[in-house]
Length: 256
Image (tube, rainbow, N blue to C red):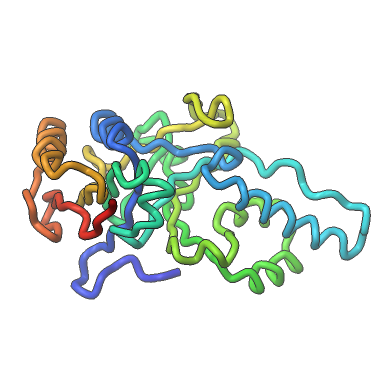
């Protein structure tokens, strides 16, 4: 796993690409929305992991089918890249959204968001996605399915390596006497289940907002006003964040 500190000694930032509507919901609620593993934007990664484990099983039983289900994992995705055209198009509302930079070493909790309830804290705060397919094939040789199921949300095909992804992952079924409340939103799947994640601190660890290449520059003022209204100190058009302030800047990219 890569270091979570920059050369300056400060926490590294990773970026969550979303729409303006998503930014508004995140800032106003003070929470991130984690999506069920079966309902992510790219269904290929789940197929990849099912095929990976199925191929392993078929080395001893040629008739063995791929596993049908990987359990109740919920995921928030981030990238090390703050201004990438492919990510803008895929996850940033086709260049009309934002990339929200948060500190990589931040701690998050699942409901009921009580700092006193230690069991409710995220058990694996941050996981770096692996794209090494040859290593994945070797990995399945020596572990049980339950362990592979835990690792599956961190494994993707090499073709996705450009995304340089990190994830917050929690397992709803990990709590014996409590299941976090699940919300639902309309999507291409019909309905997509999700749960909320909250920071251990009063505010989300947002340190930078990058506006998408297709966003009107006037949005800088409105985004700053949104943040300020919800208690976030802002640092105007600074290229980088300082202390607890949030830097806001436009994309350096241009689209037609």
